[in-house]
Image (cartoon, rainbow, N blue to C red; front, side, top):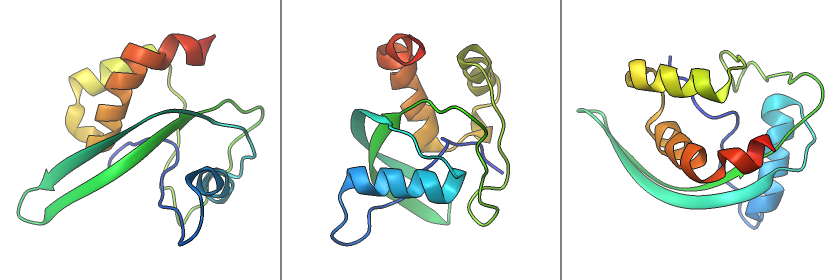
Length: 118
């Protein structure tokens, strides 16, 4: 099992990224919040002999009040960690995290964490 960001998906045909973000937050986490766009990036992640993945990722961050109710067909496990705990875990055990989440977190931590925590 890999740990990753809270929610991710692809827009449906004809659906804007913004609409897809709100839809997937409701579907995966049972939340209705107003995430804010941070940045986008592309990545390529090889998976040994299995193949590789190339993605264009739009990164959003938001806050919510209440408890997330994860959809069992979408999410195997959830947990809350502080930014400090996350950074320490990623440094100590990087193979436990998805490639895109490691890339996202580096930039979030460097460029956006102070505004997210404000």
